[in-house]
Image (cartoon, rainbow, N blue to C red):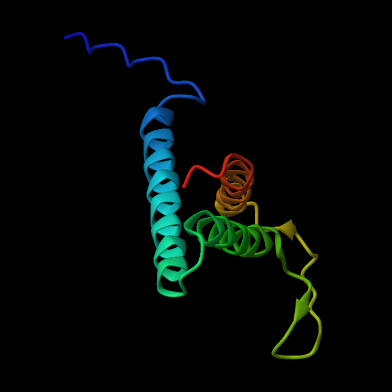
Length: 114
């Protein structure tokens, strides 16, 4: 009885689903932050472009800083260095979303579409 040969796997197998989820999350975040900024600008009777741009800048910078915050090393609870060596940034894709939102803010700021 012969068994079917397993399909060859590579490091890129299954990446289509991950990329699709990342793109959907990024578009959803961009639309959500843009609507939040537009709503705040409308409520404050300001320019919608200014509100959207400010929201993209603020949220994008916050996400970038959170994503680049180092892990390990200093313990805030003990107030001293732990035995773990610092591992550097979190290396999570959240900082990429921050960069994307800041870049989107620049595009909206320069183009002023609203």
